[in-house]
Length: 106
Image 1 (cartoon, rainbow, N blue to C red):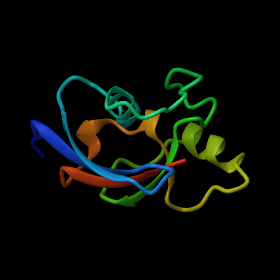
Image 2 (cartoon, helix red, strand yellow):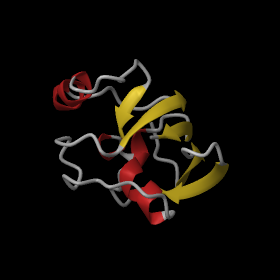
Image 3 (cartoon, rainbow, N blue to C red):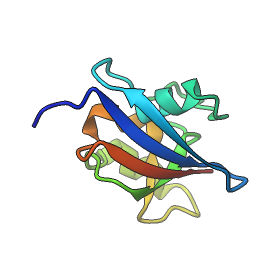
Image 4 (cartoon, one colour):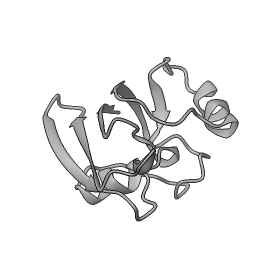
């Protein structure tokens, strides 16, 4: 599998606003890093260690890497977690296998 030079991410924020973004790959960035750089207010209290769930989002479309045990453990602590819930800090941009995703922020 070759790495795409850029991935396309559609972000739905808490107000329902939908925006499309292109993010470069090959720099080891997480989806959390990219979304924060685009100006969205993600707290990311733990700095990407899967310890706080403040970067939780719903993956509405797209195929990414499977969640780690640490990510699943953190998501299990959330009362409103659902099958589409993921931690943005645990998704590397390079793992968007079809080069695109749609996410909803919380």
